[in-house]
Each structure stands twice: as structure tokens, then as C-alpha cells.
Amino acid sequence: MTQGKDIAPGDEATRTEIQAVWGGALQGGILPAKRSDSVLIFSDPSRGEQYGYYDGWLPDDGDGPVYEYTGQGQIGDQEMLRGNKAIREYQADGTTLRVFVASRRRRQGPQVFKYLGEFELDEAEPVYERLVHDATDRERVVFMFRLRPKAGTVVDEAYALPPASRTEITQWAPLGEIGRFRGKHARPQGSRRIAPERNLNTRTTRSASEAVTVRRLEAELCARFEKFLADKNHDVCRFEIRVKGEPGIMRTDTCDETDRVLYEAKGDASRGRVREAIGQLADYRRHLLPKRERCAVLLPNRPTPDVENLIDTSGLALVYEENGEFIGWPVSGS
Image 1 (tube, rainbow, N blue to C red):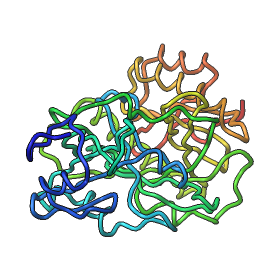
Image 2: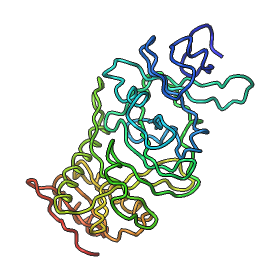
Image 3: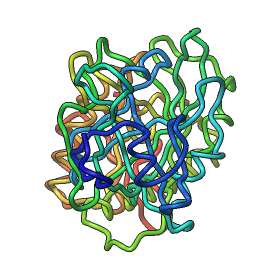
Image 4: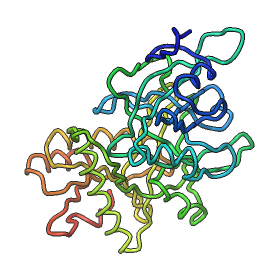
């Protein structure tokens, strides 16, 4: 219960009490509140399960925690309108994103929400699309907003993304991309097809962290390579993997479906980044069906001879960019 009209991060309050402080409507998941220049975001993970998605904190990705929140719209493909648009354009509108999560405590009376605090969209990837199944098992596209906590926000492990009940491989794509690819091809057994990523920047007042810079460099390299593959009439896709018993989400980089080659891109050719790529490819390939027998490390330039030997002795191919060309492509059979 709040004291007076103050609601601080960590406090619990009813919608009526929240409305008294910031305004907005009493119903809905995303509520623009003009009186306080806020966008009020209400999350109830227990209700989302019936629509085939989950909200919650993901494990730290190197740039701090991130809360993934599913956009507005329970029937059919979601559209970037109303509440979804209010989140996407919050900076241009000069509003503040405030997140409330349904309380886990049982009590009589109106539903109670815990105020987590103020958030901002992730710099490198503010929103992407995911293909999910609704309560009637129909496929639809939903928006996944990646929300980063600002100073003073409560990062409560009680609201972490729950562990997957089974290993799932699904689709993800940048904003507006899944629609272009749905139904274009037959799906391979065990997997669903997705579109390639493109870097989506959002205006921000923060300086980019090292993790954000790395993700941008990798996204830009992938975009150049995917255009190269498309120009060769190769089919490109990406996969999202949730592993049974684990809360995290793994997302692959480029997969050349024409040659069945899975690539992991890195923003530089250092030993540390290449080691990461080797481990990621070993992890991803175990879950993808049909199995990708050939995997390759994608780099923006040629690594040192010893790092190149590391890739070779790991049973992987190397593709790197040089003067606008990709050396090492096409990848030969194993």
C-alpha cells in the first residue's frame, strides 16, 4: 500500500491509486498518461502464458539487465499503433516509461501492481518481432520491447523470465520483417523460418557502452553479409532458442539456408571474440533441425594466424571481410 500520493519503486498499488498519481485509464496494458507525460506499462506474466508469450527479466547480457515486454494486442498480428507506438516513440514525445508488474502476493480486493520504476528502450535493439501461437494455436506476430532500467529501478528476480518447460525453436526478426517472409518457404522439421536482423537505433542521451557498440558492429557486419548472400540468391534466416529448464533466450546470427551454413558474427577479430563465437556455434548447432553440419565464424577482418588456426582446428570455417568482399565464401563441405 502506498503512503498518500507517493509511489516509489518497490511500492505496491492498485490501478486506482496509480491513476491518482500519474493519470491514465484504469484498464489496458499500455496507457499513455498525458497528465504526467508518462507511458504506464502494466505486465502480468501469468496472463500472458495463454497467449503464447512471457514477459520478464532476462539474464544480464553484458550491458545490464533487460526486461522484455510483449506489445499490445491479443488477437492477430500486433500493429505499431496506440500503446505500442507510445512506447516506440516515447523519447520523441518527451514521455517517461514506467513499468508495473502484477503482485505475486494474494489478497482480496482490486488487483495490485508493484512499481518497478522508470525504464528506457535498449539502444542497440529497442524492439523486435517474435512469431508466437495464441490461445487457439494460431500463429501471430507480436512486438517484444527491450526495456532497460534507469537509476533507482527495482530489479526483482521474482519477475525473471520463467524457465522454459521444453526446448523451443521459434522465429524472431527486426521490426516489420517477419511479415515479408511468412509463408514464403516450407518450414524445415523442428524449426521455423525467420528474417535477418537489421540494426534499429533509437535516440538516446546516454553514451554507448562497450556492449552496445559491439552489438552494433556485429549487426552492421551481419547486414552487409546478408545483403551479399541475398545478391547471390541465397535464402537467409535466424533462430531463437529457449532451452528446457533455463530462463534465457539464445538468438543466432545469420543462417544461410541455401548452403545450410550457420554463421556467428563478431565485431572484431580478437581472440576473445573468436572464442565466444566457437562456443556459441557449438551450443546452437545442437538444437537446430535439420542439423547444420557446417558452421563458420564471420569477422570484419582477417585474424592473426594463430587465431585463424584456432578456428580451423575447432572444425569451423572462417569468413572475413576485405575490401568489400567476403573471403572464405562459399564455405566448403565438412
